[in-house]
Image 1 (cartoon, rainbow, N blue to C red):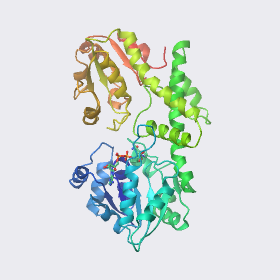
Image 2 (cartoon, rainbow, N blue to C red; image 1 turned 45 degrees about the vertical axis):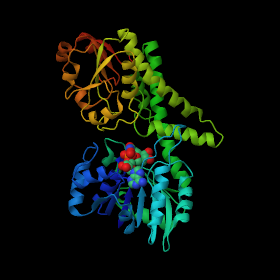
Image 3 (cartoon, helix red, strand yellow; image 1 turned 30 degrees about the horizontal axis):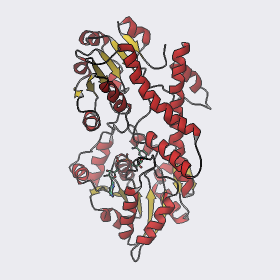
Length: 434
Ligand SMILES: NC(=O)c1ccc[n+]([C@@H]2O[C@H](COP(=O)([O-])OP(=O)(O)OC[C@H]3O[C@@H](n4cnc5c(N)ncnc54)[C@H](O)[C@@H]3O)[C@@H](O)[C@H]2O)c1
């Protein structure tokens, strides 16, 4: 089968490369000439473990091609995926301008029957809207069905998530489109991956409902961590005790500096807007968003409370990306927390194993960047861990103690043992552990 993918970012490129790995002929298109240039030169323009190898292998085999011309990704393809961004607008709703622009362009290039699939996360009703839009712009001889196939991959383990997903959701009213998509996903079907076949609206909502639920789990444990600190309980053990109950499960119950990334913040806001447009207030999700905003500010507050006025002080921040194994800085807690402490007058020395390039684009200009955690810590009055990268889990505390000028240690991912850190001579602060 030949397929086209429009939008070659985190989702589009992983989807394209993984389908190529299944033996499908894939053309990935993107309007960003620099990105396509890099891909054609054998370089993946962002960090995702294992992706470069799959891309290289399938380009060599001829299963994967890159272009800036959308028409090339449409012309020979039976299935065309839309995987462009749906960033938040000022009012929290999803900006569909990229999706609509692409849908119109696909319509102008349709030369036979094709299934047009939204892989981007889009509000309920978008599939229907695209159907109308494509019909209005269709050229002679074009025929199509629309489907929703939301993506659930996690950055940092995107390939594994795509190759072994918990489920594949397909929403369409067309039995022909459903059959074609099942055929495309056959390698996963053979692995007993559960398939949810449903209508477009339900598929669209499954994606938002899933992200809102996971975000709520994080906000739940973050809010509980505040109570743990007051009553002398350990949030890690509370979460473990809860998570062992199979009805609850252990995932997404790690207290920390708040959720970030390209999905949870924007998707929770978008589902709230969608609900409001339909005359509803989703109070639980509203609270999750609020708790998350508070959580980031609480972390900055912990630093200020412990160290006093930050003017003239230097803080070392280790880990900048919103989670490990990605260079994605979109809505990373580091942005708010660093912004807040710098506003209070602190100087910031930062280290991240891969996200420095992306961080420079979004963090205040005064931040200094280092290639090594010890270099970053040199002479700082305190150290803050914001991302639980593996390379930060086993720092040499003796060496750290020697090179830091002060002894404040803020471990906002709870990766170190409080008693041992205090024994090592640090004024140690974490989240939800007294
Ligand atoms: N990143 C994730 O972890 C993740 C997971 C699941 C779902 N999603 C959803 O998938 C969608 C894409 O997310 P992403 O993180 O891959 O975004 P991204 O910003 O990394 O990539 C989007 C790409 O689309 C391209 N694009 C925009 N307009 C275009 C046009 N007219 N023609 C061709 N290309 C165009 C951009 O240049 C960019 O390369 C979003 O809706 C997101 O919510 C993301």
